[in-house]
Each structure stands twice: as structure tokens, then as C-alpha cells.
Image 1: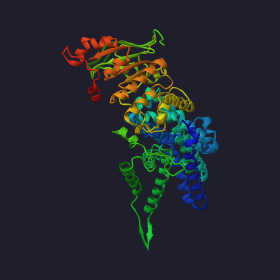
Image 2: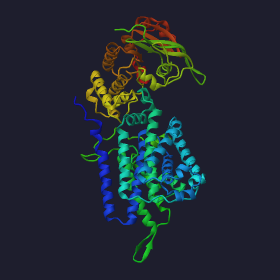
Image 3: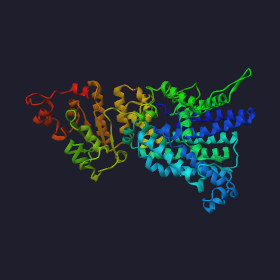
Image 4: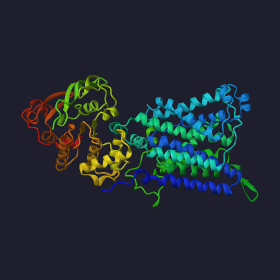
Length: 357
Length: 258
């Protein structure tokens, strides 16, 4: 029989399509978008990083995680510690060690360090959590979110407590946002075609048979957990540079559920799904945000009540789970020769949510 | 060719599930390069014994030895690295992956690169004569092909022992004949020690050099096919108390019911 083309040759098209599509969006935004629209686009790129990071773990392992936003928190605060000018830090963050108080690193250095910090934290925590399966693992990740949030909300001398820390240089623009999203997509793609990615998807489908095939489930899960924490740590760092302030409330339940619903809407088992879910949901969120502000029709202003945005996101997620549990992408990847190229699966793919039953 | 003295052994193994004795003092040996049979009525503890031998079920008492090396408490994936492979009654293929990737997963699990694992998968598929299935999604396979792919996945990188849990269940006589030929080749050509668990007693009697009979968690008889055929204890276990009845050559009903 003919030898198959290599794994990369078969699949490289997907990340290229995604990255080029995002590049076009960035270029259009830069050329024609208002200042406000540029900010919306940057936010979307950061959300793509977060959701692609989530996909690396949730999509490949089939375990739902509620804890990944804590890595965003870790990355954002690490960037705050590294990037705020020493003069400001010595007033607001007195508890920092002296060497950290006196450093100020540029964005290009602070961001990877923040990602690594989140990854190392995930490596330590994951050694414990990844031993769990199914709903126990999901609840443990939820616990992680709560613990990290509590520490960052109350360790006043280091994190500024509930209040915001200000003074991170606001150096984000659409191009850097696009670069971040590209980095996230490339890392996620390389992981998913790696040995660990294949092994982890096997454990997702048939954990018992995967063990019988020599796969160490805990180890493969841990690798995905660390890689996804790194990506989301980077996203947190860019988010800090985007807002130029950080506060612990930004990295808690709302962000967790918005990003998870983006992943669910797009299709949680495919990279294309993760990216397209964010794009679609960002458009809808922006739409509802404008409707909340009100639109004027012949002198009258019609506005939705505040909070309609959240209700809409919730409703869309529920409808998707009911009627299209594999998401907009049907868990398939973009490719040439029509979309989607891959043959339909023989049976509906179970979503990670089946673990909750 | 036989590598003498090399065996996978369960010695005096007992397993209890909340007071229920699933296995009591079971001793069984699977020699390299030979085919050993394990038969017994439903619920006798056959699958529990396979789980014990492959690290999926910890032993309560007793020990497992792989060619002299004690293996108690070892994880299932590590045991596969040591060369003890198995199949499952229910197939358990990775249903969303193509057949070739199902095999590739084992190669990757055993430490090969993806490129090497794909090459090995294609070699094994060709060896089994099912290269044409390589790109079919495993979930879409008919039942009998599923079994052959499961065996292919288990013999990736040529294990030392292979434990087959009812590989012929639901197969026609013709299909199980083909299966028998494959099992013979695995033991003969690859020098793998095969443990065959089957309800199709005709197949077991035809293939195996030595047969263990398990009933209610205890080994009640060990012997050659001829000895098993004539054993009163076996007839008793299968047929109730009618000591004069013969064992039917193929217990098709039992295979379908499982």
C-alpha cells in the first residue's frame, strides 16, 4: 500500500488557515477600525489565546477544567510585578522581595517569564490533580481557581488585595494581539500532533485500552496541563499589558465561564473550533454590549437591560449543547478541499461533559 | 521454537470483591511461544484473572511473575512496556481514530516516534493481512474486523505475552477458523506466549497445548485437550450434575450470550 504523507504534511493546513484568517482580521481592524474597535479586537485575540490554551488540555484529555483562568491570573500578576516601574511598585507592593522591587522588564521579556511561571505552577499542582479522573478532576480544578483567587485577593502586600494594581505599560495593539494568538495556535498545533497529543486523545476515547497500550495517562495529562498553563499564562501577561491594571476579580468565574462557553460553542475537540468559537462569541458579545448601550431609532433609544449579555451567552451555550454538542466546527479541523475535509465520524462524538453524568 | 522455562505465572492468586471471592488460590502459567487455554462458565473469574495478569486488578494474595521477575502492584501501562499485552472482550478500539492510528497509539505508548510507530503499524497490518483497513475509522468497522484490529494493536512491537479475552465471541465458524490461524502464527512465528480465554470450546481444544478450567474462582482442572475432554470435573462444571453427558464441540449459545 502507499505510504501516508507525514503527519505534518497532512495537518499543517489548519494552523495556516487560522493564522492567515486572523491576520486579515487584524489588518482590517488596524486599517479601518475605531480606537474602541481596536480594543475589542485585542480582547478577542487575548481570548483566542486563553481558549486555545483551554483546548490543549480540555480538547485532548476530555477532562473539563474550571481552573485554567487561575493561570491567567498568575501570568498577569507576574507581569505586573516585572513590568511596573520600581517607583510605583515600592509604594503599592511593599511586600515584594527587593530584587523584584528593583527590576523593570520590557514586555518581550516579561511575557515569556509570566508564561513559564504559570507553567511551573501547573507542573507542581498538576502532579496531584492529574491523578484524578472525570468529575473529580473537574472539581479539583475548580478548587484551584478558588484557592488562587483567594490568595491573590488577600495577600495585600504582594498583590494589592481586592483593589487594582496600576502602572503596567499599556503596550498592546492588534499586531501584538495577533502575534500572541499565532504563538498560541502554533504551540497548540505542535502539541496536538506530538506523541503526547496522540496518546492523550487515545486516553480520552478509551482510557483502559490506552493503559493497555503502554500509555501513562497521568504523565500525558500533566504534559497537556503544563503546555496549556504556559499558553494561558502568556495570555494573562498580554491582558495585563492591555488593561494596564490587574485585579483578581478579572480572573474568576465570569472569565472562566465565558471562555468555556466559547470553547463549547466552537467545538471543544478541535483547534479550529476553539478559534472560531472565540470569533463568533466575540461578535455576539460586542453586539449585545452595543444593544445594552442602546440604539437610537427615530429619536427613541432602545436599550437592553444590563446583564443581557451574560444571559445571552448562557442561553447560546445551552442551545449549542442541546442541538450541536460538537460545536460549530463539529470537532473537525479547517482544511483545503472544502470544509470539512475529514469524513464524518461514525457516531456522535461524546463531549467532555459526558464525564459529568 | 520454544524458549524453555520462560513463563508468565500467577501463583496462588486470590482476589476478593467486597467479601465475594472472585479468585481463590489460582495458579496458572503461560509459557513463551505456546498457546494456553482458559475456559470456564460465565462468572468463573476468567476476566478477573486476565486483569490480574495485566496489572488492571491488584492481587489480594499471591504473586505474579514475569519470567522470574515479581510484578506485584505494577501499573498496567508499565506491564505493557515489559511485554505483556492484552485485548478486551468489548474491543475497546479508539473509535474516532483510523485503524492505522489505533495501532500507532501503542507504538507511541511504547516510546516510538510517530513516524516509527506508523511504519510499525503498517508492518503489523500487512502481517495480519488487513492493510486495506488502514484508513478506515475504527468506529465504523464490522465486528470481526474490530477483533483483528484489536489483536493488531496488541501485537505492536511484538510483546512477549498476549492475553486474548474472548477474541472469537460472535464469530462464525469460518471466521473463527481464520482467527485460529492468526493465533497460531502469533505463537509460532513471533514466539509470543498466548493465553486464550474463550467460550468457543471447540476453538480452545483445537488450538491449545494446555488448558486451565476455572469455576467459581478456582482452577478445577488442568490438562491437555484430550484430558479436558474426558474430565468429569469439567463436565460437572459445565453441565450441572449429569456426569454422562458429553461436552458439545462448540458451545455457540454461550458465546453469543456473553
